[in-house]
Image 1 (tube, rainbow, N blue to C red):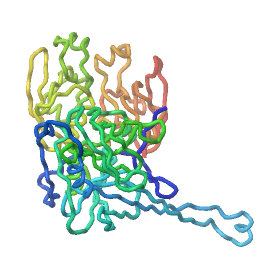
Image 2 (tube, one colour):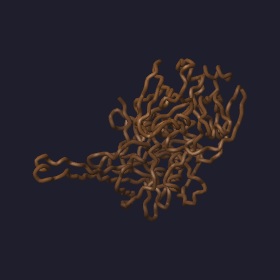
Image 3 (cartoon, one colour):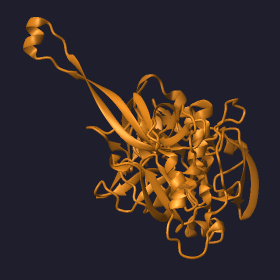
Image 4 (cartoon, rainbow, N blue to C red):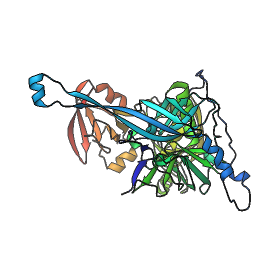
Length: 471
């Protein structure tokens, strides 16, 4: 079975926690932004004709801006004392300390020492050291990290730092030549070559943290230790931060994943400005428009978009007049065809940002301006209890689950793997909370009380009770 391998590597015995891979901070935050060099032109515009015998001139300046990141973590473990010594000498348990060391890569993107890398490279580290290509070794501090995108920003204090120019990763095309630069397996800085194999990859490797995936896939060789290193185009511009590989052998088999630099940059700017990532929030549940659904809604069969299945109360979408069965076609001119695309695009907008949404309603195209809210740690804004998200029962849901009129309540749409409420599962319908019938989220939350709570749920054609404990 193929598995996801985080491309950081152990130097000694144990790897750092490796799970994982956004947004522009509020513009009014009076915080210095990093000085970035940006070149948004497509790589193909300046491509020279003829046979290319060497990319040395492209790669050489890139190597100077890619660093090795060494992490150290102190692990404290309680060791039980021998019962004999405990009984006769009163000795308690002892604490033993061990040191875990990890290795990853990073990319200098600003002359004042800001470095982009992966969250899983620095996660849990007690100490970070950066080795520059000119053999200087400098201590680094973590400015901020975002597990939901597997991006982290660290900073060093050093002079005469080389930096990489940033490209516009949205302009990458499948087939573009790219190079992966990093320190795989601790052998030293290495450059590998390949092409962009795919864009917009979402394969669920960040689901555990409710992450946002938009990976660039490449066949340029990426191995453990490459995490946080550079993926650059044929002009030597940074297009991605290498993050992981999919492999059944823990080695490279040609499926490498990198976070697009556009996404990484928005995360970086927010982390530098505030230390956190603020994400936009719309307040809708959507499904992709299939050809059959398009016909049912009176649209052309080839219509690309997402149909609104639910609008949460008192949310930006509700205030802007968006309704169920509206079909969202684009946001700020960018076509939306999947739930993941909508979620990713909205998450990259800062709260309070106004976006233009084009949608279809009853066969007519409409446009509306929506001022986004702020996504809280709770997730999408329709969280009932930690890790459990719900939505109202729409006509579509009723048809899908063949519900009779006597079944009313809230549909469980998602239960996070880390949620303590694993007795609930997607597809269940919460009918009552503490013996009170509920049909909307705010009412359901009001009925919850600290301690034990009784839920009545409809599950697989039958009613039953579940007892949950709420802090």
